[in-house]
Length: 318
Ligand code: SF4
Image 1 (cartoon, protein in one colour):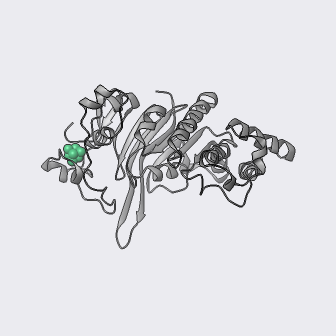
Image 2 (cartoon, protein in one colour):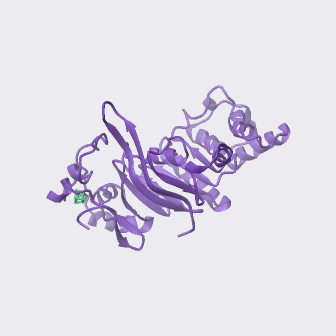
Image 3 (cartoon, helix red, strand yellow):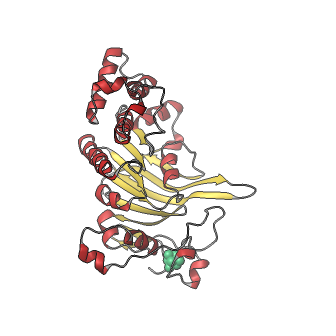
């Protein structure tokens, strides 16, 4: 694996949820992302994926653990160092409709970060930079004077990516960045992100509930359930040999390219809803939905076990 750019160690993020209750959105999660690689973070809604992305970016303060960027503990940076770090780490949001200010032109939206960080102080050079970014994402300089509502969903997400790239970041959190787009546009945006990764050595945390797209883009994949990481492996390994019953259930719903594989693998319907992560019960958090649960599963929380070759899973069956 490439040298880690991001290291997340025993990260915890809890939110108060009424009297003496805690919503354990992220509960003791560790992983690293190699420089120039993509980690896919998958799981159903409410499993903590977005909270992890936002805590890495400093939008949320962690309640435990730490995040290292290129070996530096982000919690120990001074104000100036933190500001410099915001240039290196950017986010592409889920909803291209909501994440762009409707009162600003697209040019102003992309220019905003350059002004905040006092880059390109010459106005003409700054405008050229904005035009260059628009062309980079497949738009053109005439688009700079238009407002977000004049664009399609796919074009707006291209604007969001241009805004994220304006500060020449090294690391992008793509939070459900393609979920709101039509399927044909999703592939275009993912291919564009992969091209930028190759050309600019970008590192991605790609957060999604879409397992078919993760297979295409991610080098490693981590599966989250109720604030816990339940499985982590190289993406090819995870998709060909999933070990955790939750991962097996999720993957059984993903259409396979090979019809013989599809016939030989029965679809497993995950029962019920994801329980609330407020004051979770002891034992395995997947226990109430797991068809293979043992008596021990309700009492003892499984820890991640090394299955070899960088493949980890947390289940008492393993
Ligand atoms: Fe199922 Fe038990 Fe494994 Fe949890 S630990 S996934 S309940 S078998």
